[in-house]
Image (tube, rainbow, N blue to C red; front, side, top):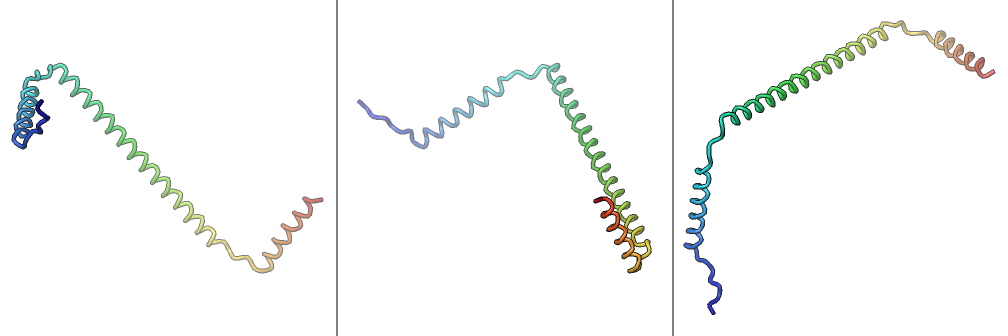
Length: 111
């Protein structure tokens, strides 16, 4: 009984070429898509593209709104800092009087 014979290089090349031809013949034999199916696919693709564009617009608007809110907060902080800086500095006696008033209020609450 004859043993298994491994295919040589030429045999493998020929088999690959035959497989390539077979695949090409199968691909060429496919019928063209129905125009209605093509139109449906194009419509779905257009819908997806429109939805994606709307999503991008919404994201852009959201980013712009966040940026505007951040700028407004920064402006408020700046104005608060200016107002704080414009406040007259308390003298040592005034600070002591305010501290004593807070202490007296705490004592009154405890009783």
